[in-house]
Each structure stands twice: as C-alpha cells, then as structure tokens.
Length: 220
Image 1 (cartoon, rainbow, N blue to C red):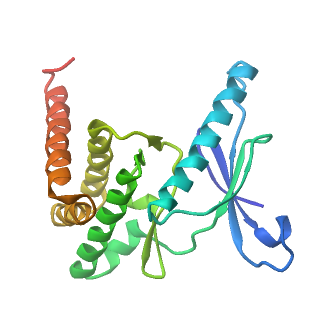
Image 2: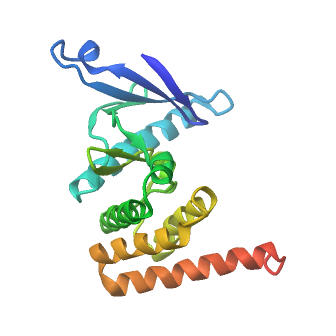
C-alpha cells in the first residue's frame, strides 16, 4: 500500500485490489483508514470512528443509488475502521477547468450542478464541495472525499453546500467563477426543478449575507 494523503481523521492509501482480494483483478483501490486518536478515551474514540466509517459507507451507497458518480464501496472493515473503495483515476477538475476553453468549463460546471442536484435529492450534503474533490474520468465527473458528508435534507445544509462551492470557485477560478456558478445552478435546476432552485438560491443569499454581517462586526 502507498500512503497518498493524510488528514486529521484518516490516512488514504492506494493499493492493488488483486493483492488484497482477487489475483486476476488488476484494479487499484483506495483504502481509507480512520486512525485512532490518543487524546480521546479509547471507548469514545472507537465509537466515533465506527460511526463515521459506517456513515461514510452508507452515504456513498445512497449517493450511488441516486445516480451520483461516486466511488464504489468494496468492503467496510469495522475492526480496523477501514473502507475499501474504487480508485477514480482521472484528472482533477481544479486543474482541468483552467486548461480548457470557457465553453468546456461552463459545460462541466452545468454537470457539476446536476451531480449536486442528485446528491441533494438523495438527502445527502457533501460538506466539502470544491473542484479539488472532483475527478473527470472518461467524460464523467466524480465526487470524492465524503469524510464531512452528512445525511441532511434541510434547506440550510443544502445552501451551505452550495455556498462552500461558490467560495471555493471564487478562490480558485476567480476570473470566470460567476459564469461558472450560474451554470452550476442551471444544472441543479435540471435535476431539482425551478422551485427548488429558487429556494436554495434564496438560502444561499441569506447565508452569504450573514457572512458579510459577521465580517463587518454586526453579528457576534
């Protein structure tokens, strides 16, 4: 196994599926291992890691059922708190979007919106929507890294999900993010309809207004 990423809660490894399971299968897999935290009481630590491991696996399964492009889950190991999932080999959208013509960028942003719409239809919010957590593989956009995802159908949570993406796009794709985010909303509307779009846009405006008030010191 090769360590490819280490976060606060988990280590991410790239491994050969054939070595772990089937000797005839050449497929690569991702192994996400939620590591123990020494500062937590052992029983509490195990409970939290188990809950988060199970939740992430269930979220990925639920998203897949609703047509969202996410990795397949192959195994959930609740002894070592590991998830074995499909490795999505492709190009990260963060870089890809900056390397193609604006027409292609807007087309991909619309598809991002469709994928978010399907995710929200599934009653799931991603919690960390950025183009760094999106992979383009064979013309399809895949969402990855569901460590902060939740089962949450509230308008507030959906608004926050889109707010996080808008902020990420403004930071990373600042030259054209307004046109891009408008296409995200257009794609979202294709899946959820005009009324749901209006509702989430209103909530998005409210969330952003609250942020501006805090910046000016009007909300403590």
